[in-house]
Image (cartoon, rainbow, N blue to C red; front, top):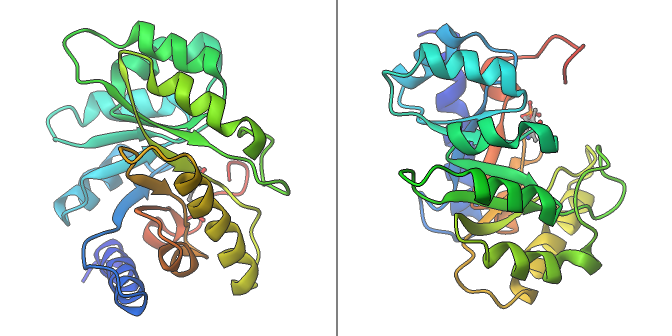
Length: 229
Ligand SMILES: *Cc1c(COP(=O)(O)O)cnc(C)c1O
């Protein structure tokens, strides 16, 4: 068996085991393959092993892969930081955007989403402090932003996303993910169905706390060159 196929199967097994361990229905967690830095041919291989959803962080790199994989019915997720002068190609090329943390960006994406496409699925990125990045709205600003984004006509607000600082301590991992679950519940917006959280090293903790979509790179594709993490 190819390493990529074995890795994908191992990640699917980890997700299923975590679903079972927390009494959640099988299939309640979607696997997003984070394919930044991977060449298009590797995505095509993963597609051949049944993977449909791919996450990309860098627009230029993603656009090249999208063009060469246009024959495949891939669901494309943009998971990187969004610059306001890059919103148009993101609105035109992706099915999901995970890193919304400002109304201005959301407004631009809504304005620029082509009429003939379905509304763009978006998640609001929350920064609980101590994050690996400075992106994300603080919990105190979440409710206002969520209601404003939900009102935009060409977006469909699906839920929340987080990129916690890496820690090997499972209790710390769970505490952060639990906080995300509570923030989502606290919004009282029952149409929101997504918690985008959990990466290669903490997916079990994320699933235990209610993740509905885990974003996995290293465990599927191997370690990335260190210049781009
Ligand atoms: C790179 C990246 C991931 C994947 O991380 P791994 O630890 O390689 O699984 C997930 N989410 C975001 C936003 C990323 O940038």
